[in-house]
Image (cartoon, one colour):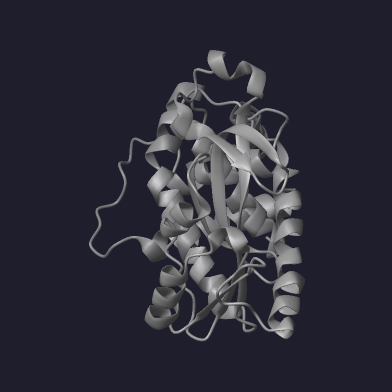
Length: 277
């Protein structure tokens, strides 16, 4: 645990220095914690303490001599760094894409419920039918958010997008940058069927999207393509099972933004763990 904490801090500090624009003034000297310390504490919480920020903060203070900061002040700092967290993940994802010489990626989604269906009328975290979605693979309804993930064939997330649960897979796909190296192959399931979007992606990116076809599809695949789709899509199911295993029984959050931020922290921590950090 100590080695992983040090590695995460070093990676985050280097990424922040690398992505910081030129001639950016240094942070205020009165801050008790640097940006790297705040994000490291949050990732330690996601990786080792089920997302509990208070426990992770106490761990960093007791074992690493980190300056003390009250819970509300720490949460405010963390929310202020939410965009920085996503940009750092995008930078890490770009590095992983260049190291992934196989150039095969899988796109899929998984639901994250904020409460049980019987408690939907009493839910205060999210409101509205936009969050009442259906998970086709589990054949069940849920109330919450849906997470679109692009992962390598090894099961390492390199891109993600969080959106309302009722939105379709095609709508969620539009929120992803899908900035893959030229010549890559992106495998998706039948829920992402959109011939116009596929043609546009293939033409604009120089890559190829291969979507699983239904029986009545106008563009059926060759049996060899169907086999490759089924083979490589197994990896992302393993990725999702390992990722959701990090979630606590209930993700504690006071706001919808905080709930989405904790999901992003779990994905970031899982990616770092998968690459050996």
